[in-house]
Image (cartoon, rainbow, N blue to C red; front, side, top):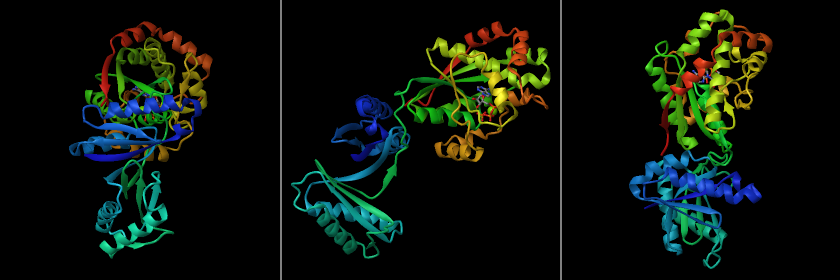
Length: 387
Ligand code: ATP
Ligand code: MG
């Protein structure tokens, strides 16, 4: 069996809500580990996961994507007896020496005060045991390359590699949002950021077959799968939007097509959100990134809505968004070269400063509501990234 120590994150600060957050976090972890034979236990603010050896990959995949924890580590478990403890330290040190690490220190915590050595003595004696076994390693208490952690609790735990958790809040602790998911770089990051604040997300993708290929749709399904590993799964609604786009192309002045298409997507998304009892919309918009993302156009695009629209990327630089997309693993899929419906229908000189009045006058002249409802009724649902 392999054992992991898991540290819950910010939720420990949430006072009265602490119990609720912990229950949600625990349920999420259990769901991600379902069927693996892993067991979660808690004792004094610490969580332990014990999993069968062949479930290492699955367990680490889950822990590295679990929102709401501040850290996790795979630990050696040994008897509370100094010989066994120092051996375990030396075994951890073997890995460090093999990686070319030169300096280390031992840090010890002792919850069980009946253990005969105090923390300071544990550090000194374990340090000696390690340098005795691996002379290439030396102790540096001020600025070590690695730290061997020793915890004396119900049993003794030793680990040298501590992984940072993703922090944030457990998914399912902050309501539900509907993300407008395109195949681009931004919207998967937007979904992740809202999930990191505890929001459960569903997604809607507007497909313009045959102007956009089935590959473009599959790309969005893969993106939802990658993001879904963090968000506890994503239900992806794919809406065939070709008739609406053709109506816009036929009836609207070309510079207005992008703004009007966004308005139509928003109207459809709001209908879907109401049907699914979802309380807000989420987009990957970022101020001034493209022509449709001026503050005037954003005002026009949301002018017919009553649900709030959350735009977690609105003030972020593209570079920072890309860095985050790489970190969560969506970037390489996002840049696959399948065309985006909006690119095909986009005008060469889009309106940059739409007025709400003009946008609404043109939008109403499209008379697209019936087309939008029909498109929504034909939507398909994929379950992406569930454990
Ligand atoms: P992204 O990288 O997320 O595609 P973008 O920089 O390409 O964003 P736009 O194309 O202007 O920006 O889209 C703005 C937002 O509108 C997107 O982040 C997304 O939330 C939504 N959106 C655009 N196209 C679609 C689509 N086909 N289906 C669903 N949502 C879409
Ligand atoms: Mg896009």
